[in-house]
Amino acid sequence: MHFKLSEEHEMMRKMVREFALKEVAPTAALRDEKEEFDRSIFDRIGELGLAGIPWEEEWGGAGADFLSYVIAVEELSRVCASTGVTLSAHISLASWPIYKFGTKEQKERFLRPLAEGTKLGAYGLTEPGSGSDAAGMKTTAVKDGDHYVLNGNKIFITNGGEAEIYVVFALTDPALKHKGTTAFIVEKGTPGFSIGKKEKKLGIRSSPTTEIIFDNCRIPADQRLGEEGEGFKIAMMTLDGGRNGIAAQALGIAQGAFDAALSYAKERNQFGKPIAKQQAIQFKLADMATQIEAARLLTYQAAWLESQGLPYGKASAMAKLYAGDIAMQVTTEAVQIFGGYGYTREYPVERMMRDAKITQIYEGTNEIQRVVISNHLLRE
Ligand code: CAA
Image 1: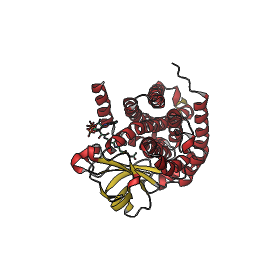
Image 2: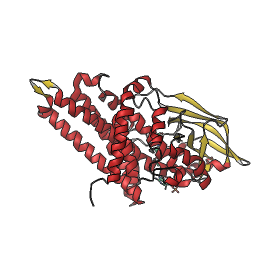
Image 3: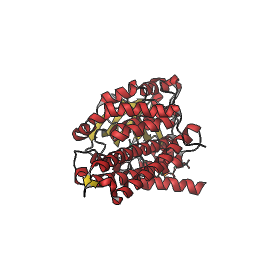
Image 4: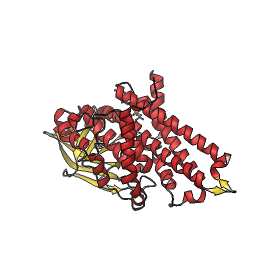
């Protein structure tokens, strides 16, 4: 066992860090302010071969592993958490279930453009009445000849409106509840499929979050993903990996805030010396760095398990739970170290603190992560 990243992983970090600093960071504050998604950043992600990091070259991917993927999300999130979640939702939530459960034809048609970054992906599970209780969904899909007719609405869709490909879940047999849930691939532009309200949010403001609406939306049966009744399992398995993408996002946010706080503490003079010379600040920095390192170990371990083909659901939930919680703590402390300046939009730490909050909420609240972890513990 060793903790040194391979040359390939170090190269991934270097490449994404350079891209993030040069092409993502300069507009992060403005995009946050204006609540604007910039598609050209995702286009560049595609050009750099980052849109399909873990998929084989056969499908247009980079043929790398899940550790490379989480390093990329971490580095993007270090400067812009919105860009981090754009990639995380694209790879973990939209592409992964197609990679895992799609037919050869579905992979050719949907996974390849996702992996090449010519199309953006999204995932639709949550509904107004079913968030943590994902099995409580109401959206229906009724078989009609060689089509399914979808009715209902999904909310809080990351990449909503901007994405071309949506993996969504609906009840093909409402009486069976979660066992009657089926997954579908829906394309933007399909009649009966529309984009509803765009949320105005506390953080990740340059990542669009919308409602999606199905109004007698006819989906060809060959866009069903997996078998009828397999949808809930597909949704849960997808989230097992997605949660580690969010752990990586949280880790990146925390690292970004720590880096900013450390350099500020060395420059800011009070009482005749840099505040970094005060033990009160030193202890904060020590705690922040320790928390970040622990979150990184959990996140990388979960990615490593997935890459090895070993069970990773519990590890991923632990990583998301811990990294989300420490991202909130670290960013709050970073604002504290910056003092009054930290509370203003002159510095990035207030944005990072706002961005951190969502990592405790989406892809399963941190309370739900504890349910997932304890379910594993009781089963083991
Ligand atoms: N892998 C495979 N199967 C799984 C599974 C997993 N990880 N988790 C559960 N299942 C299976 C169970 O084995 C069980 O199967 P059987 O019926 O055949 O026995 C079935 O699913 C039902 O399991 P549970 O009884 O445990 O289900 P539950 O209704 O009690 O719910 C839950 C469990 C963990 C609370 C689940 O509802 C959950 O994860 N909730 C949170 C939902 C969530 O994370 N939403 C986020 C949406 S995405 C997002 O945030 C937006 C974005 O774009 C970023």
